[in-house]
Figure (spheres, helix red, strand yellow):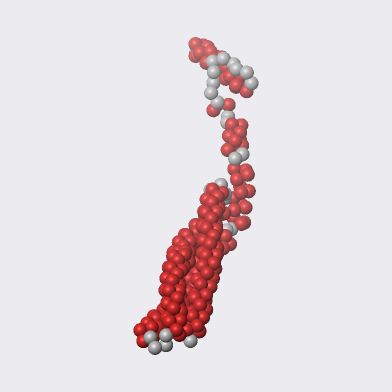
Length: 282
């Protein structure tokens, strides 16, 4: 009976050791992978911010319709990164941190296991000694009493070990369910918002009027030449009397205009002299 109890406790102890080791290994791996997942999501957010900035810079150089469409798209995409930031923070708090806390939980369970094993070994040794004493002296009532007491202590230790295994398994199952449920909920919230925002961004891009912007672009090709051509037409349409006169003949067009003005003045002087002679005769 004693040997069977010891064997049962040995099997229970090994089962608890295996359970703790298994959780320590796989929860540790999950923690590292989820942490890497969160870091990559944060880097994706940073790259998206750079993309938003570049789209805004490009938009400022474009035609009005395309410019507005790009800016609206960038605004929606920037809003998406706000939701991605919330996703990163929630994953860190609801997924990574609880998994990281399992390092402490595993350590505590190992301490409990160590204390249980120490008590079990001490009780097993005592039981063996009392069993040998009773076999040597079956009439020793004191040895019989001590053996019964030791058996009770061993049973209590076994029950504590069973409760430790049971509680550890219960907590492990509950925690992994909660952690993965939080992960799924966070991702669903983000992707739901992402679908909403990306739909708006898509509509902003589709609203860009290609024909209107193309017309603006075509007009801009001739807009820069228009003022200079107009100046040439205006300059050529001016009459000689509208141009400034100089006291001396100058070269080119101005020279002809100035000489013509002086000739006209000479004719007017001759007409005045003839008019004076006529008046004297009268």
